[in-house]
Length: 219
Image 1: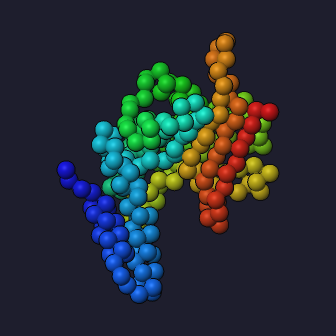
Image 2 (image 1 turned 135 degrees about the horizontal axis):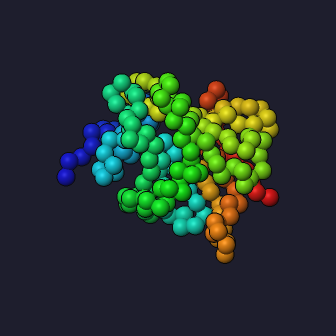
């Protein structure tokens, strides 16, 4: 089986790190390994899901029910760091955190209602805005329909996509780059058969790089 170049590089550096050496050299090797992991991490992750092909993961969605199964929201980029349409936003499951599974069309319909794509922004300037419709069930200072914006930039590691969201006055209106969303919900006997208890956004402050974890509850 063909190995990924990034994996070979990490393996080589790791082997070198295990050999006897001076503390200064060991520190340099450790720093190199850290940089390698950062630069190739997204590419290795994408390559681990051949059913999807070359893609850029955007957000990891976790939930309290069957927490071992993760949903990955992703997009695809061209060589000019532009979004490839059809659709620009899509999802797949990682069962037990590793095994690919296609998302059922009915579940996709539900996701489209909760993550509503603003087509006008995409057509106008190549970025896209997604409105989070679930927030009407929660108490927050973000308004009834907060949104996040996905845009791209070109970095040393290649094309990257960033998911940014502006928080409310209680968080000094700072903007975070979202990495994951955790949904806590419970079942109901009547439609829509689901009650959202809370959403937790995890990411980093785009200015300071500080880790941010913010929970919005229905209580």
